[in-house]
Image (cartoon, rainbow, N blue to C red; front, side):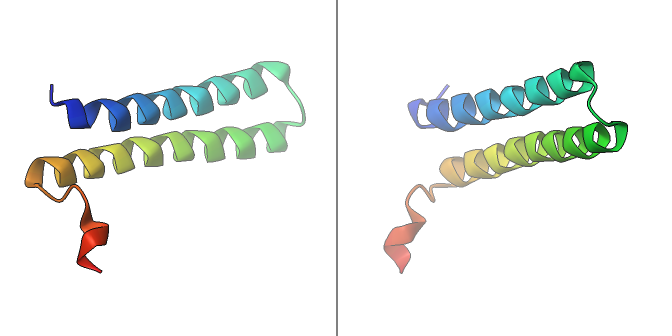
Length: 72
């Protein structure tokens, strides 16, 4: 594995696991049902988005666009 990929993968996986953990805890805590469903949906959506961003970042790193801020 390339050293440049370690940080984005670790941060994205930890973030996604955190949101999944929070969603499970909310579901188990059993506050109002509509509030739980809304919060769980939001957190799971955020976890999926985090994984999507990680995949896009890995594609950028592999294609050679490590620092695209230098173009501006």
